[in-house]
Amino acid sequence: MDMEELTKVTETSKVVSVSDITRQIKQSLEQRFTKVWVQGEISNFKHHTSGHLYFTLKDEGAQISATMWRSRVANLLFAPEDGMKVIARGGITVYPPRGNYQIDVERLTPVGIGELQIAFERLKRKLAAEGLFDESRKRPLPQFPERIGVITSETGAALQDIRTVLARRFPFVEVILIPVRVQGAGASDEIAQGLRDMNRFGGVDVIIVGRGGGSLEDLWAFNEEIVARAIAASRVPVVSAVGHEIDFTIADFVADLRAPTPSAAAEMVVPDRTELLELIRNYEYTMRQDALQMIGSHRDRVQSLLSSYAFNRPKDLVREYVQKLDELMRVQEMKAHHLFEQAHRSQESLHKRLAGLSPESILKRGYAIVRRGEALITRAEHLRKQDETTIQFQDGSVTAKVQ
Image (cartoon, rainbow, N blue to C red; front, side, top):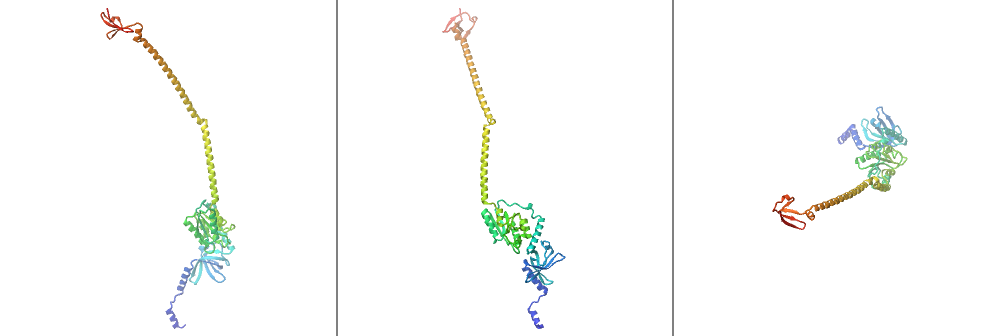
């Protein structure tokens, strides 16, 4: 290209600096790839003296540089090394001085069985040391829940198993579902967020979190620290129901109750309606029998009290006093009658004595009554010659003059 052609290109096109184009690329990549999950094999691993990790993730077709800062390295539960298969979560960034793009790793999870088992044991020891597995912090489940929160895949068999068991055992309960992914990249974040959302909702009495069976890799989301801490922070009791009976996850140790399967979890959180009705009938029968027995016992006691000497003594005393009162009344009546008789006889005697002392009786005995005018003459000296008197006899009276 000669100078003339170069001049034409620069006139028709906008020329930018290396820094400008790198900045534009950095902005474009970092805005588009804010959070990615990348699986690959570690190579060129270097643990810098600063504490940061530098390595390359590669597969058979490509490779990408990766950086993990010291503040995040402290949360690693395994020791990364070359040849180890991992899943890295982070955002894509560009390092302008070299024009390289790389992944800024926030979390690193091993993929191989051996590495997963090592990570499992390390996290288990860490959380156990913090007391997250202590029985003292386990809460009892409500006896009669009205709403049950379920955090699982809405397309998995676990949800259908839970609903089937609940409908059979206790159909009155309401199920609140928060659908999440239960395996693969980002599953643990969704499960933890589901637990936080269910607590914010605050309308459930107990939470079931889990999934059906699978390999260690399939169940790994329930071995992530973020899920364990979300379960520990839940204000609502949590039942962990992950995999089959032989499967154990970190979530099982942290949860308030571990169920061997999702179906078993549904069995544990609600009572059996049939058993409950039978229990109520038994309670009703027992209460009725107890009440009848109590009534009979009290009736017998009342009858015993009614027939007892102590209870009947007051009545006997009343009867005795009534009888005594009757006797006293008869005695008083007899005395009164006797007194009346005596008084009557005295009256008759006095009457006879008075009758015997009456003028008529005296006149009948031959005496006479002398009057001068209206005055009664009781002595002879009271009369003078020529006094006219009236002399009353039994059968009449005559007049006389004193000579």
